[in-house]
Length: 312
Picture 1 (tube, rainbow, N blue to C red):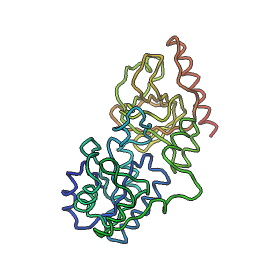
Picture 2 (picture 1 turned 135 degrees about the vertical axis):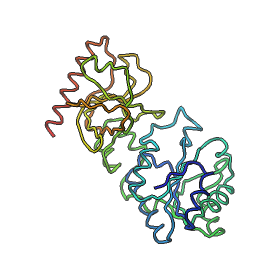
Picture 3 (picture 1 turned 90 degrees about the vertical axis):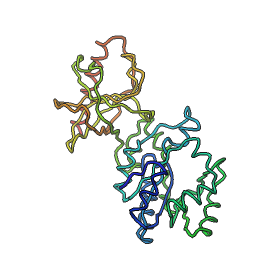
Picture 4 (picture 1 turned 90 degrees about the horizontal axis):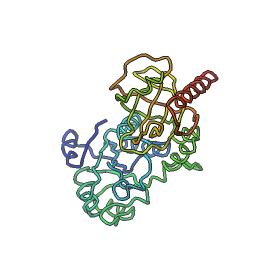
């Protein structure tokens, strides 16, 4: 799958193929089962039309630009979306820089110049509540009318959603916030995990007898926080451990990060990407008055996690 960063690179990508495209647009946060149904329809339509299946996403997500203080916690980063969309058959991921300039493009220009001239769309699959263009004046009705004018088809994503099942990124966030991990897993179609690169921390865990692999959560706010029994996947191998997700109040932490103590593990994995799968919530994050109390609690957490894995 090809990642195209910015609309200025679309023409370069199109030079490699004269095929048109079948396009869908959205945040696709989590790439959950509802999203997967839409992607399946996208790929099938592209095969029928001998076109390229393309997904357009925005960075930052629109709400993160217009109302950052109210923007929801992300389920997946762009890197994770790329891997998941590729797995489901998408051939191009167009990542549009969503800024004030892009937000001021008129709805008419969005259709004629971006969709028709640059993306050469044959078909568009979009939600009937999708709004676009300056002042959000563009809507599903306008797209259907433009489709007749420029010769592309338009489908409503509601046609491909799962029946009698409420699946949304919001519902998944709510499940995760309530530590209903099994409910989140059902909606995602997979276990909820966090993927990131291990960086050098302050080595405090090592001094306490519990060395940790530290992963920044980047700019996103995590939809989960607290202490969890986890599985850790590294280079095709799987381990178990205990993880803390939060701001580490006992050591005056500010920035959210993930710290995972991997059981019976001695390898140097600095700089490597790891996947941390949340299996069971053990407790919420809390402040301890001393490092000795923190150490005692980590010991308890580790024993609970080992017991969980021993019983499964």
